[in-house]
Length: 175
View 1: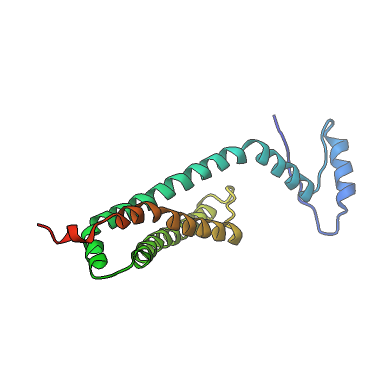
View 2: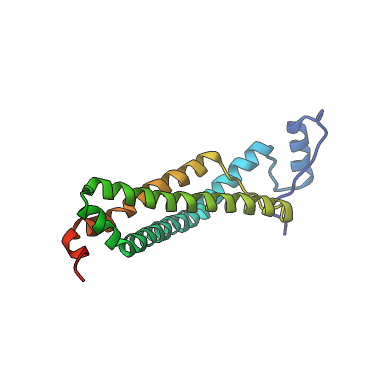
């Protein structure tokens, strides 16, 4: 059973004439231009496939945010004594927060860049090895992922900072 077939024509051929001839030779068929076919296929993919991909992307963002949050929390809590010393010598809570947010941003941005680079490499390799599989890495999507990584990094710094702000500087010097 054939669901569709593609015709290649000379550039001088009239698509409407070729389409009428094709429909006349294959009863029950329809003729579409390249743009009409692409539009119909896009609607088909969007209705059945992209909703699943959207859920997977959402799960990926949740997992990515959790990884950034856990990394930031662990790195911050491991250095809680150092932050206590900073507070004991007069560092403000805002200063401590800036250190943690920069730490979190660096981790998030490094991982976002690594992920974007890996995606570009995978898209290139897929295009070379399996040319039938179309990949489209758009600049707008890359910018969106990068922006989401920045926001997740900032959000991930709130929990450890809240814990650091409760540190009593005097506790640092007790044995």
